[in-house]
Length: 265
Image (cartoon, rainbow, N blue to C red; front, top):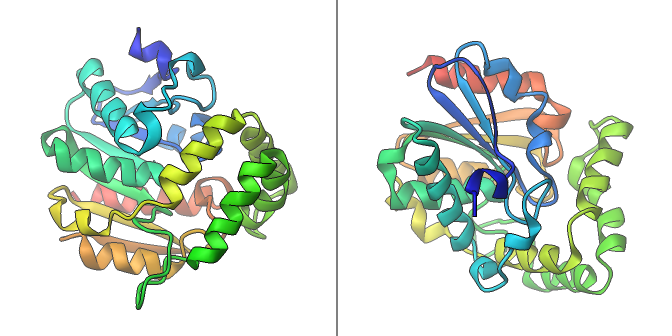
């Protein structure tokens, strides 16, 4: 199968160093449309949809392969190799940030830098670690998703996006969520929200920028602090915005953060 068609890959921009953008749960590559074009004058911009999201080839979704994030990690590495990209700056939102971390551990030679936007290595509270959810609360959230994915989406999305987002963008994110097949959404949510990759962070050799929102119910600012503390040589920037989607509700701040990081090379 053609991997470019499978992931609905789109590329544009200059022949400069490639920026590869990965989207989070419930959205697709269109979520980057306010941020990615800002880099087209000096970079090759590459966007793609995770299998099961957006305009990807949903028939390629394999419930065994994607039971954990490993399947998505393999897809990302295959995509970079297929495109024959030089070392990429990988910009991953939420769960795609962790997918990038795991990929960079496996094949660090493919990555120049990582930019982790509202990413989390573990969503569960655990002792002094504040991931955002107690185990019982998370199981309740996932149980609601299992029973009624559309209802769950309508209930969760306003909380996820935060109070800063314009009403039309809230509706857009909601529509993106409900277009995901419920069976795929259930499995992807469990693969993401029940995972714990904290022990993997010390293996990352690639420099990273951690971009976190000041108020985010999914990935609290403490998570950003944790990532920064456990990723050697990383930088941390906490944006003065709410919600889990700074690239949608604070694109100018997100662009500025990434520009500063790229200029610091």
